[in-house]
Length: 578
DNA sequence: CTGGGGAAGGGGCCC
DNA sequence: AGGGCCCCTTCCCCA
Image (cartoon, rainbow, N blue to C red):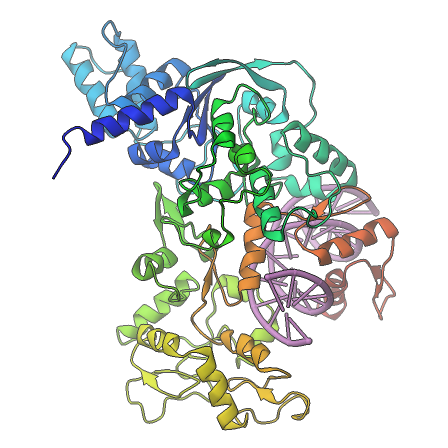
């Protein structure tokens, strides 16, 4: 059974929704005009848009490539499949359309334009650019998805961000900007690549709060970690919705829609009044929200009861994996993690491919090569040396490395991948991983009890106080749950994936903390300067800036430091050979 | 330009 | 689950 006009009707509805601003979740800025649209539609029509909307609610297009008039035509085309207003279109118009279509990777439209131009017998001239060639100030499609953007944003966008501009007219899907001509020292750049500077400077901290307020944020307010009327979960989600993450590496501040508090935002009002937000609670929407909390600020203000935190942990399609060394090429996510995501989609436990190098190693091995023991992905190299130490070298802390000391798969022939808990060998890492997942935590614990914790020779702690010993390394613990937690660090499998970037974690807590940085959730506010932090410890650390306390003293030169880590790096100066 | 210090972000891990 | 601490890293400022 097939409805003949289903697609057409659907698109018609979507276009009507666009005209009313319903459910629009992205703003496209072209010159001084704002166009509202739906990310899904844009992403479906153009790979370039797909890459842009993945984590942005606010997209600024290169005015060298497309102007507002042309983009209006293009947006109409996207939603209707018809090129309107071209009856008396000039060659110049088609040329501009072609340029814009090429830039936006709307290949069908570009083809139509070429055909039309051919038909009217004009020679193509003007600048024809390659598909999707981004203009100035544009993020390359291959750029990481989650990063500060619009480093070269047009002034209009900066002023928009700075609150100088606001919409004064609403015409369907298009909002026009007007300048309030207020001098505003806050540039977008401060929240872009140099945001850390603004964070580190107390004088700019105050400005930062002001800036955020101008953007409709209010992060400068001192607030308790969790308001009494909100659960931590609600707090997180609520802050997510208010977000506008000041965190440079998580969410572009350009995401912050400028009309957040404006009355002339129909889609906001629509959302805010709509109790049926289950559609927006989908993983994909969460992905959009988390990247772009601003656009849904009102929609989820007050706790967003329809949003479940568990949703955040779901796995969206196209999860970015910037941290995993993957790249985004023309909007197509490339890289091992995504391969893993595709392969393991829907599984609770993921095959943990921690980095490209690692997977490459495994692939080579599965093809008969030999893994280079001691290799470690760049990210893992940044981890603490403790893990390496306990894992017996530079193997990244995994307990399933063939050839690792103490884990020679003797007697297993080609089964180089050995499961530490049960000792079984497997010919490939994937088979091993599948097997590892079959181990329940209870099994591991029971085995530990049966073994009497004798696996670890030379325990570093008295066996009576820390009877639970890791079978892989020599660590021991007071309670079994901690041991289980620890033993996961030896697994290849990392059960807790980040919904946004796809990074995998061994502990849920680490993953939720990581998510906080994506969401821009900073519950811990400094009473002195209003600066906010994702962790209590950071706030404690930060407070020393105000108190002047420097509890960490160098035993060599007597230098004092507010942060222990700075003392450590300082000590390197003393101990380095040079 | 360079190196050191200050401050901060993020992940790992133990409690 | 959350707190706390460790470590690595980055960015900025300044001498």
